[in-house]
Length: 192
Length: 192
Image (cartoon, rainbow over all chains, first blue to last red; front, side, top):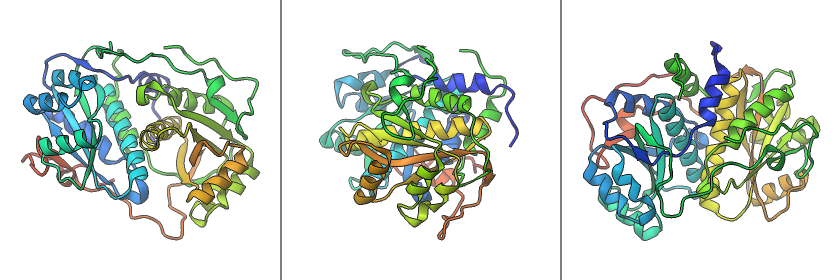
């Protein structure tokens, strides 16, 4: 492995990946989309099943239709591009876990390439069925989320009920060797 | 955002994150463990619930006990350190997804710091219950996986039935705007 000279900078960039829900109107170049997908393609999965398929959506009308599935994802209409994740539909828990893994790679790759990503969940079973209809996905597959990608305009959360930001301190999140067993020298961590 | 000069190198490192299941005996310095956890701490989660708690295990006897839960995770006994993930146990799908996200960050941060990580799943409900007993985790919490971390000795899969490596080509994984709709100029992607 070639060591990276600036590992601390890179970790800082990854640490600062946040949901971006407001984008500049600029299109995402296709070459950049492929760079992001190439990182996602190599994500590990349960027994290397790679239970995913990606629908890249650069047709704004389709994004607008998806954005109307429920009010908290209305912001999706303002994204220049989305990558909808389709799962095989074989195993609920392990596919949800693998979907989380591949989504995190999409968000990190986008951030490192100067873009921002935000995840929109379609909603309940009926809303997922409607999303599948819009995207032509067979109903027996699982499809519940799309990762919007674009050049960030603002990191503000435009939703009617924005979520509290920040994170719990490490002292609260970490035990050593046994649940609830703390170690003295726990760093504070950064607040932003 | 400060742009990274070597984005392509960083993406290549991330793309090449693989499960590492054989480690050198060297301990992982505590400062490095905190660096990895700081990246994990900032992972996004459903409505920022941060449904996780991490048990850092550097007591080799505990890792040995966990490794005996089932034969495919026997390799865990050779890891110098593990980070067991404990979830609140409130929501199966969204917590599995968030667990996948945080796990991917642990694996990526470990790789960028010159370490390797491997995920071990405890197994079925009875095996998960036994893992909780070993780690003192309340039974109402969810705990199904631990991320082993150490300096890589080999990327070989030591398990009796190693999984086929490699990944599906982008042409098979990606549609445009509608499920099954291909775009002509799909890059081949890299084979390793």
